[in-house]
Length: 311
Ligand code: FAD
Image (cartoon, rainbow, N blue to C red; front, side):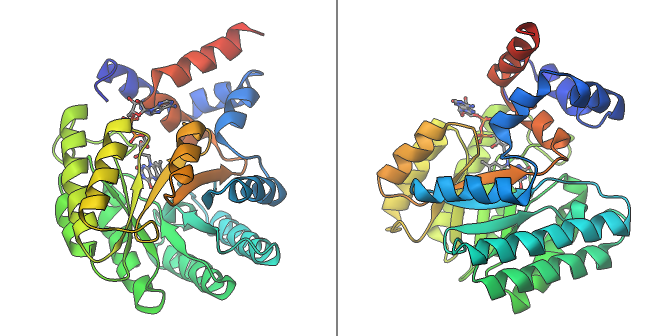
């Protein structure tokens, strides 16, 4: 972003890939409070409790079992099994009309065995369909985009409501939006959270924002179901305006925000009649997720530092 030195974001995103820093952060006593702000808890029950609360307050939810860059088939299977358990529990609690799941293919084996990742995510899509809800495939760094969109296309043959995520910071994304703005297609548009080279991604906040607006226009004027994932007040206002322009009713698009980020704004938009979905992460593998949140916003870092000092 352009609100702080780009080097700050780079340093934190570099730390997000360092196992030494990971050990430091995970064992620091103050970390708990910071994690709690962005993560619902570690267990399926924690996730269920938070979902109940959010759905009860008029929001919808997409649940993410934290995990990424899995390196063994056993780990990948464990992630799949947790999603199957979660979907059973959500259905049992009658929550599947308000809650779906988000899945990272790298947690299911994408980096070392694409076929395994496909089989795993397919099992999750089947369970979601049986439970009466949907799956959205999170998008990770640009080396995985083609593989993820390929898997999406294959899944959509049997599970047409499987959602995709497109990242406005990638130069290719306008074209991907055109490709996916078709009937029945669910597309989450976000700015993008990874450190990407200039060759594939816009680097300035201004260029990313401009790309976001071009993409939301394509999605809102198309035939699919756009999911505008941003906390940016300017982009939210533009989204509202264009949705009106293209005659979209509240069940024909939605806003999405992260758990713990601008909760008042989430409530405000829902109060105005918009569909608002909170992205709700849970699980113990929160390190990469938390570091990306810290990289996004200096205020989160201040929060982190304050928790450290107050010990
Ligand atoms: P930013 O540029 O971070 O912020 C813009 C403005 O928003 C700020 O200037 C401020 O005015 C306001 N704002 C932001 N945070 C706060 C705050 N805490 N309090 C008050 N105001 C605030 N990225 C991926 O790469 N892949 C994914 O699959 C993915 N899925 C996502 C799903 C959801 C539902 C959301 C919301 C984000 C997802 N992201 C994903 C992350 C996304 O790419 C961005 O990194 C993240 O959302 C920050 O960008 P932003 O649009 O909120 O704008």
